[in-house]
Every structure is written in structure tokens, then in C-alpha cells.
Length: 177
Image (cartoon, rainbow, N blue to C red; front, top):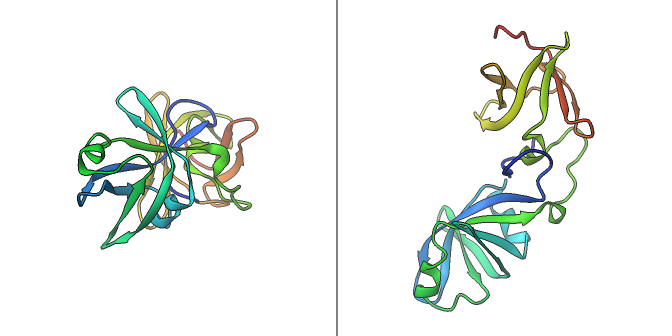
């Protein structure tokens, strides 16, 4: 599974959150960012970014980016000094869905799974995917229906079919789990 990009809302997201602006880095407008892509440097392949600051949206071009310690720093067009950088702190970083490459067969962007209905092999609806968790061993679907369920995303074992066209995931999972 290709991790995180997580969307906001139901259905395939037109924009997908891929990171967050952390702090200013230096005095020339550089920013530390937290990337949700795997590997984290992949976020630098996408430009423009759509920044959401509270309820405002801003489109920005990535001028330069690099690994700095365990994280990433970026220089954005129009962000020339520390004061300009401070105005972007905490912004969520989105990209348009069509900027992402198509996943390989049997790979899925998390964002594409949000809002999908999960049913078991007996046809019992277990809820909608509201999020995913990376546990290290395997990813886990968080579903919300009559209650929250955590279902391991194990293709061919637990997850039997992912049908994004019809927005359903069929799982070998009992409602009592």
C-alpha cells in the first residue's frame, strides 16, 4: 500500500494532503516540512503545492528542497525571508490527485480508500473507511459504521477485493471482531 496521502471528505479526493509546514529554517524563507509521502523526499517531486492555512488556500511553486537531518527543508517561490516563512507555519500541504502517478496493480493510495464502504464476504456492511493506520507490520483500515472497527489491510488474506470504481472493499472479517 502506498502511504499516507489522506484526503478530506468522501470519494476520491481532488486534492490530497501530503504534508505539513513545520517551522522556519534560517532567515532566507526556508521551511522545515513534515512529509507524509513514502519515501518522504517524494513530496519534493510535486509542484505546485496547494497550502491550506486555516480556511485560505494558496498555490506555491517549490523552488528547491533537500534532506536536512532527519527531515526536509524547502524554499518556496515568494517566501523570501523569515517573516514570510512564519506566515506559512502549520499550513497543510496538498497536491492535486492527478499529480500523483498511478499506483501499481494491487497498490492503493490511502486517500483513494477514504469513504469506501467495507462489506464482509457475507454481504454485511462493516462501515466506511475513515482512516488508515501504519503499524509497521501491516496497514490497518479504520472503519466507522455501527461502531469503529480496525481491519488489517492484508491483501488476499483479509482484504479480498478492492473495487474503487464501485467504492467497495470486500473483506474476510466477521462483524463481531
